[in-house]
Length: 321
View: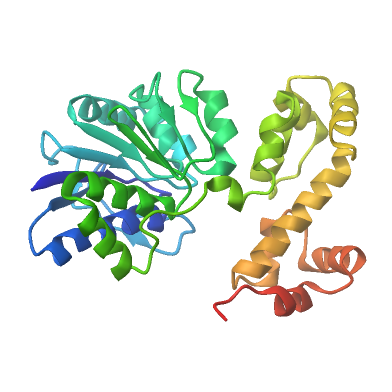
């Protein structure tokens, strides 16, 4: 039996925790043996708030009462992970345990914590495509490869965005107990045992952003992660490390569109994606996409697309049909 620990924290994504753990749990169930002893660990052992604020997850252990050693240590991801990379207590514990563990891995943005611990220095890692450039910028000692669903680099194994954590788990199970068991689990979970293609199939902008000059790529990433804020040219120029005037000129030269138009287009595309893939209220989507009010968003939709947000949702909602 292998002892597997998952590090969790406030703001972790539920699927990053439960998706992989469900795979490992099914390894026990389907094989009829205790392949894995599954533990979840937080700083103090208290329930952690899940990303989105809709629930809590109760870990099995705290740093104080967790076992001394693990066969595999995984780090969950979530929108709070980049900030948690500055949590000294968490990073110190991860470093200490990771140095002795035979294998250490991360799911999605959990790669930020892994990189902050120094365990991934000199190794190739992946993360969610949306955060890949930020990870590379903040941790230059780590080689970030944005397209693969997962990467094995010595004892470090990392997964891309969200559901890729299950791909990672299936690969680990295959390494530990054979391909047959991994395939049985995939069939039971109605998953591909090995997914075709990489993350670029899910991001039309990934390749283009990788090829863009660094100042423009930084600005686009900043805009995408700050849509709910009042985006100011001064803040974007600071992120790009150029003057406001230079930024406006560079952006137009490199993208053939004004910075203002790009911001407006990004807000619209984000709202469209949320309307297609979630059941969130239009008012909430307006706020999440950077529109001051639902009425403002409605006017933009009518002007740019010719229909209202509600009509757009009715026409383009993704479903299983």
